[in-house]
Structure formats: C-alpha cells, structure tokens
Image 1 (tube, rainbow, N blue to C red):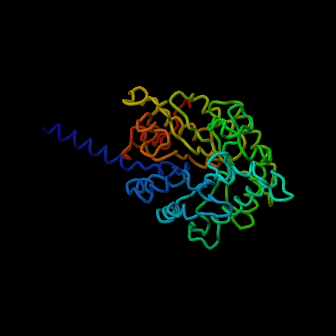
Image 2: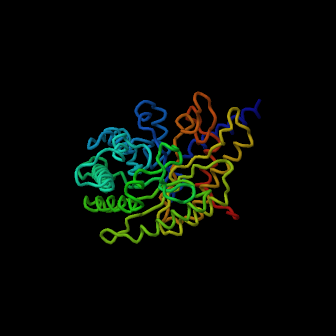
Length: 387
C-alpha cells in the first residue's frame, strides 16, 4: 500500500512538472506559434485558452487570405480578423504573422473573372491584374499598420509584425505555376503569373515594402512562403535564386524581402537529412527563416494508429526543433509555427467523417500527445552530438 502511494505521488509530481512545460517559454530564441481558426477562438473556450497559453505568435489559417478580406472588388471586410487581434492584444500582446497577401488559391470569384472578361478601355490584362494586386496589398497593409489602431505592442508598434507576401509561386519542378487552376487544384497555375508574368513576385514585394515604409511601419518583415524544400532540390534551388534576386531590390535602402517561410508539411517518411540540407540552403540566403506551417503526417494511416508510426512522428517533431536550432543562427530565426492547434482542427485529420491522420501535438480533445513533449524537448534541451 505504502509503495503504491509513493508511486502515485511520484506520478502526480511528474504530471505536475509536465504541465509546466509551455511551448512559448521553452526557448527564448525560438518564437513558437500556431495557425489558428478565428471562428474557434470565438466559439471554443478550451481552444482559445490553449492558444493563449502555448503560443506567442499567431497566424490566421484562412481569415487574411484574399477571398476573406476582399470578397467583392473594392469591398474589404477586416472585421473577420478582430477576434484574432483581440486575443493577441489581451493575451500578452502576441505577435501576428499575416498569411497571405498573394496566392494562386483562395481567390474571390471576381479576381478569377478578370482573366477572361472585357477590360476597361485602354487597359491590358496585365495592367488590370497588376492594379488588382497593388490595391489589395496597399489597402491590407495600411489597415494593419494603421497608427490609430489599438493593436500595438508596448513600444507602440503594430502587433502584426510580418506577412507572407507571396505564397507558393513554384511547382515541384521549380517552375513558375502556369496551368489554369481548374486543371489541377493542388498543382495548378497562378492567375498572377499567367496575366502579369514572373515579375508579379517582385511587384508584390515592392508594393508591400513601399506601403509599409510610407506608413512608418519600418519594422514589418516580408516573407516568401512555400512548401517542398524538404523533397524537391529543383524547387529549393528556384526559391533560393528568387530570394537572392529579391534581396538586391531595395526601397529606402531596405531589401524588399526579409525572410523565407518553409512550410514543412512533412510526414513520417521525410528524411532528416533532407530537412537539414533544406535549412542549411535557406539559411545561406542570410534572410530570416520561418518554419511556417509545421505538421507531421502519419501518411493517413487510419485508426488505430500503429505504435511504431507514432514513435517515428514523436522523434521527427524533436528532430525538426533541434535541426532548426542547430543550423539556423538565432539572429535568423523567425520561429516555428505549427499548422493547426490539434487534430480536431487539422486540415489532415478527416476524410469525410473518417479519421485518417493525427498530425498535430494535441489530440481531438486538445490534450497533449506524447509528441508534444518531444517537440518541447527539441526546443529546450541541449543539442546532442550527431545533429
């Protein structure tokens, strides 16, 4: 009986110790964030409290995409993000990372219509789409760095500190996306590339930097965001070359790009060596490096998830944190953002009503999974030899 009580006491002390492990305080040199669902922030108290507790950087999953912010041409709906901003302000003035200004997906129908419908007199297709892009970027950035906004940090600077300016411009072969989106939703092309050409990327970053500088938001960080760094050398090289070219373009003496977002939607079979090589390559740009959309898929293993697969996932979460810390210098780290909070809100969890994956650190009930503690240790503990 006495031995049993001792074991229970020990178990309780271990549990209490584990509850003190909080991601946002694991490492002062690695900001830890999550992609959040704004609707859940207002409707699910457990979800909101978890976000408040664990993360010091917030990325809106969908609420700042073009279809959400400008559903009709010239009509902007910024109230969609108020809940996110309120949480950021009232839960320790958390950092907000804007996602995303220009993407080939999540476009309102009116933007798609401009690829084929009659143009205003004297205007080319490229000029019209350039105008659409410019107005959207300038209006959105100006809104979030509005000097009269209440959403500021202790220094009076906007809580929205950074933007994914352009998202996923390249296909897996390292080519600019060019096919019509309808031909293949996942690997389709970009209306921006088809109508403006590859200069749309430089233009988008220039509009973003020019607007921020004009409004006095001189600290705003501008990122290019993409996936596939870990499995496509051609894509990795294309992103590297583009980033190095953008670094040469300056506004007020400042490069128009500040960083690279490496999404890292990876899986249990993703090579640790590939992750390492991708981080080293992107770090060599000299830009900020943001692991921007991290989740680790079980490759849709389905229930029940095999123990050996879960063990691989646990280790890989730790590997990512350790590799980021080892190969990206502290002054180039923008942080690690988990894509979704738990399996309940993950884009990977369900196929129809069937659970087919469990890629996150928190389960369907927003309880910590063993992978949480491995990831925490990867952020916190000394980096072992061999990494």
